[in-house]
Image (cartoon, rainbow, N blue to C red; front, side, top):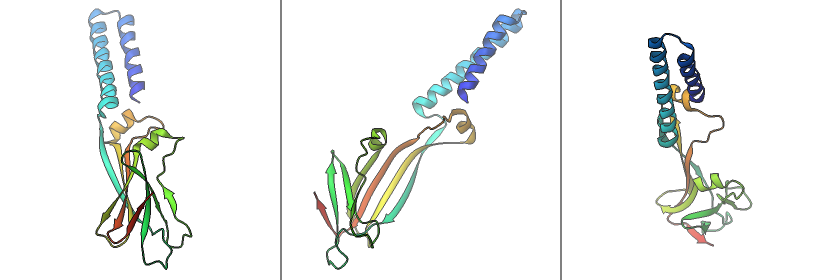
Length: 176
């Protein structure tokens, strides 16, 4: 909407400068509309550069995951494969009844932008059951006014998605 406001103020600036005959009214309205146009452009630039009108919000979700070993096995384990400097493909079962473990968070080479926003890691901590903790950080608008001014069609305000496989200390982590 800010683009339409800038366009409208620009048109009003030119119309007031070129079509109004009275000098005082012409310069007053032309100056006011020009100043409002500059303010709108500065707001748009500030939003694009510094996210004016927005704030970072994080959402945390957890989901229980299951061992890659068979149910009758006394050893509980997950598998990880390091990719890059500090990112992992995590291998575990989504439900206890799954016959086979599956890899999760492998890089999607067809969507590099989303892949660079996503990281996955693991940690051994003092918990009862293994779980995957996902923290999603997004830019959100502070109010409906800011949202209506700056929102663009199909915009993606995701900053990062961090997946952490939290494994009980008595589980094994098999690195490939």
